[in-house]
Amino acid sequence: MLLARDAVHERDVRVPRQEEAEALFEIGRMQADMDVGMMRADALDQPGRQRRRQGVLARQHDEVSGQPRAAPEIVPKLPQPGGERGDPVPVVGGGGPQLHGLAGPVEQLDPQMALDGLDAAGEGRGAQVPPLGRFGKGAGVHHRQDVLEPFKTHASPTSCDSRKLHSDLCDWHAGGQGIKRDPASQKEPSMHLARFPRVSLAHLPTPLERLDRLSRELGGPEIWIKRDDCTGLSTGGNKTRKLEFLMAEAQAQGADLVMTQGATQSNHARQTAAAAARLGMACHLLLEDRTASKDPNYRGNGNVLLDLLHGATTEERPSGLDMNAELESAASAERARGRTVYAIPGGGSNPTGALGYVNCALELVSQANDRGLVIDRLVTATGSAGTQAGLVVGLKALNSGIPCLGFGVRAPRPKQEEMVFALAQRTAEKLGCPGVVSRGDVVADTDYVGPGYGLPREDTIEAIRMFAELEGILLDPVYSGKGAAGLIDYCRKGRFAKGERIVFLHTGGAAALFGYDVVLRRPPEILAAE
Image (cartoon, rainbow, N blue to C red):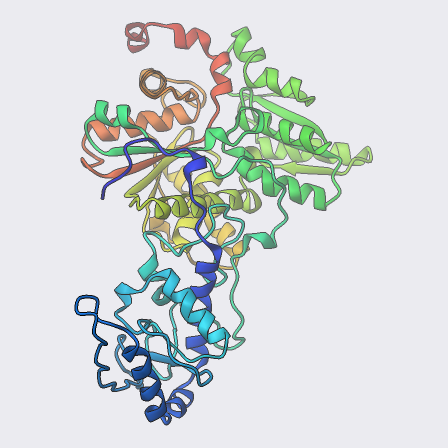
């Protein structure tokens, strides 16, 4: 597949027509609602329909000779129980002429033809809709992917704004074998994100760019980057997507104080403080000393400085405590003083926060579809689990075929994968699609953690320098730097094949660089010796 040579900025992203998706959806509904009896009744008017069809064809001229085309003999094909996928499905309508060209092979159909067919049906004219149904006991579309498959690279067309998902992506067969409507209620099962409270905080969609120089340097796969460092809130980062849903929930509960916890140089704490400032709420942060660093810049610059600039109050905790328990204890004390507290777990990683990355999965797939980019794998840093869990749920619910690999930044692999899987299950349940994620869909590699959380080793510093020198992109030493170290090592070892298209999701965090200046200034040979 040929890709544009220039990196694509967000302003170059065309928002696909929402009416295209709605047209395809409605055609599927129309097919599913018709039964064999209705179609046989329509077939009784075969002579009239044939005359109308021939009249349309007679008015069409051969492009070469200019002579009218001969009207071919029409032998209508009716879907039989157990019939084949290629059978045309008539739409019952008025007596006007049928639209020519909608009964061709499924591969030839395009969204505009689908819209034309839907428009004709809506005006009372008979229209032949594409042969997209699977016919078993009765006629109609039993699987939504039959309607959408011809138009997708990874999933059905939809808006890049990603404010909602198609309504029946999550009514899964038992065992997760497919998607179907609820035969009992005939209601469309919903994974519609607009059902959940949300405030607009992020600059979306974030850019999807190709990293040409880094790709040439590594000589293997074609590397792309999803720029979630560009979400806009207080230097950006992945937590802003989560906070759109979390802070809306806080508002809905009437909170006047938002509290959360994280490490000293926590990106999540900084973005939470910024979101609270923007929404006019007080913010209190519990910061855990996970590195035991005495460097004054680490303890007072970078994210710590920004926390204070956003008006948050802070208190420290020693390493090794159950920080979510500490958070709840502190929140209870504030509630006893009369405050209405909304407590956000570390990293914003609960089912509400993970919705932000379900939304990101839809946004990424939509961008890929828009430019014909087949993504072979998505990779990102994974820590508190919310980002990877949301991505896995979204990608699986979309039937995208894109695996997501997380490079761990703290916990051992078994624990990290179990954390992600547990949160993915809870997120899928919240969305109404339990069972969409299996245990095998969650994969993490924790070989790039180094000495511990927030402690970068040589390969992390090398990754930060490579991205900065080759692409002008700033990573951080805690999350994105370790994720990029894993990406680079996989490329060098051939674990990502030459020519594969790999998307690296940048989780942001460059503000933390100013707390690591001593480490970043060390020559590579000294780092290697440490």
